[in-house]
Amino acid sequence: MKFFDAFMKSVNFDSPYLSWMAHPAAQAIFILVIGWMIARIARRLIRKANIPGATDATTLTVRPVIAKVTFYLILLSALYAALTKLGVPTGSLLAVFGGAALAIGLALQGTLSNIAAGIMLLILHPIRVGEYIETPSVNGTILQIGLFSTTVKNVEGLTVFVPNSEIWKNRIQNYARHDVRKLLVDIGVSYDADLNETKRVLLRVMENDERVLSEPTPPECHVMSFGDSSVNLSCRCWMAGDGWLPKASDIRIALKTALDEAGIEIPFPQRVVKVLKD
Image 1 (cartoon, helix red, strand yellow):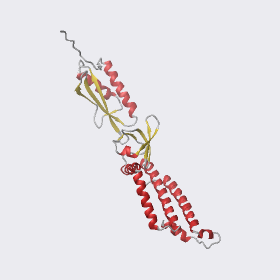
Image 2 (cartoon, rainbow, N blue to C red):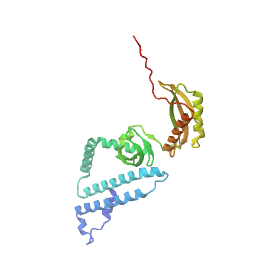
Image 3 (cartoon, rainbow, N blue to C red):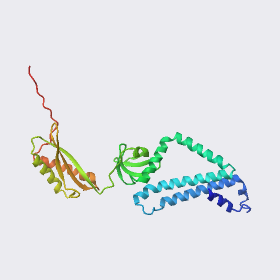
Image 4 (cartoon, rainbow, N blue to C red):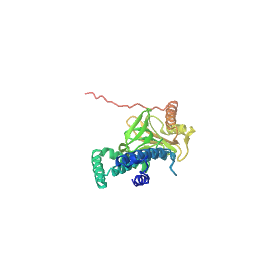
């Protein structure tokens, strides 16, 4: 606002070409036009700027929000300066803006919660643009984080707009923050199976797959529980996080194939029924 006041004072309205600008209404319109132009230029520059010390993902996440907030702050400043030129008292302007802000806040409580959640997402960075996340409401890759909503491309290739509050208030599982992930495969085998041999067969599959890592821990296979129809085992191994789904699928197929070749049955649920005769 001080910028617009200083700018208007620097203009020589005694010039015959600018004599029409001496009228307060013309000055107000001029301030609004200049403010709009400055806001657009600032928004364009911020969208193209790099944030020092920030990663590419952080820059893509924060830059659009900063550009939008700067754009509207400059417009509000220009509007305030223009109304001041028209002789509207400053105290009245502040009262009007305060009353309007209160009314809007009461009417848009859900929207404000989305803004607050958006600010928290931008400050704490639980998610960033380009990361794959899973929440109770959506699974997919983050395309954009705005003040009101987050844009996600789901597994079907569809674009989903999720209110920020829906993401912030729920559990967020971020699959992009770790270089390695542990695969857990639960398998039930027949009670007739030799459990030690079963473990050897399953471990051999994981140990012979070059995509399975020996660190942080080597492949494991444990007997976890005795179910109604099967003895339940858990196979665990570490693999690189990139290309996760195809690799995990291949390991599951290899485990099933190895059990079939060894003659180890994966039983269907069974129930024993006894018929009592009178």
